[in-house]
Length: 119
Image (cartoon, rainbow, N blue to C red):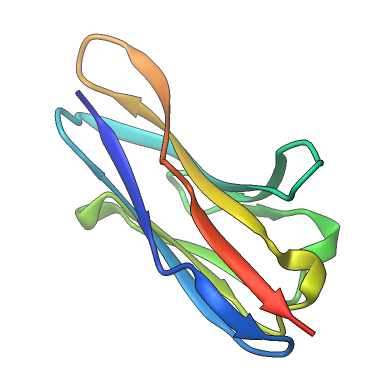
């Protein structure tokens, strides 16, 4: 069974920074895309950023220039560096990854980590 575990969330004042980590463990042969989503209270979950196995990245317009997604393939880990945080970035952040265990590909999700930005 593959698990994704996020860490690094917390409380920060507007303008501050946080770094989220998401580590995949278990029976893993290969990982394709890895991404970060967020869900604010009363809103739908939205894609924040993703990174392909080759390192190509994509960001939602609202975080461009402030957030940076990266990955360490040797550690099966993705990171989200969040700078210049705004109150509207407050949400539960989830990571996901497309993972092969050698038999099939499946999209896995982490349990979520709370990010709170105060004004």
